[in-house]
Figure 1 (cartoon, rainbow, N blue to C red):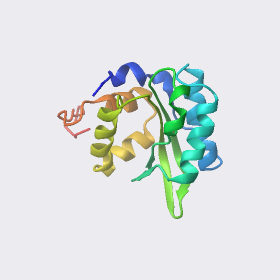
Figure 2 (figure 1 turned 90 degrees about the vertical axis):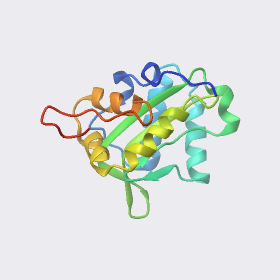
Figure 3 (figure 1 turned 45 degrees about the vertical axis):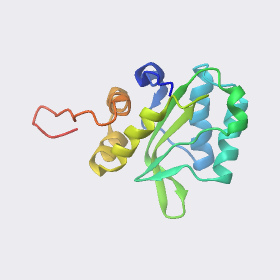
Length: 162
């Protein structure tokens, strides 16, 4: 398995806080545009993200979705990248389900497996999802998503777990 440092791929510049999206398609497009602007993918990769979403939903639950391209789009990935769109109002992703954190992914191999493992931990803690959805500091999102899976939780000044 080829593993990259998530902190190298997910920088504060790749996080959009307090964003708004008209719908799921708009949210996917915005995540994809961040990846394009960062030089991670070709513009056509965004079409692949939308096509994949039409075939199979990338909604994980707990208000989190992870749109990404299709296997046939791997040549459109220049380098591994991660983008995050924080949608405090959410957008309907599935009937009755809203996404508040949309995490766009682009990789040519299994480099993002640690991030995906980390997301499993995040999804198991509704308080963490809520904090990530409402934070006004992109560093909070970057540090939580880049944490090594299974890494001991940090605590805030008052001792509350994060």
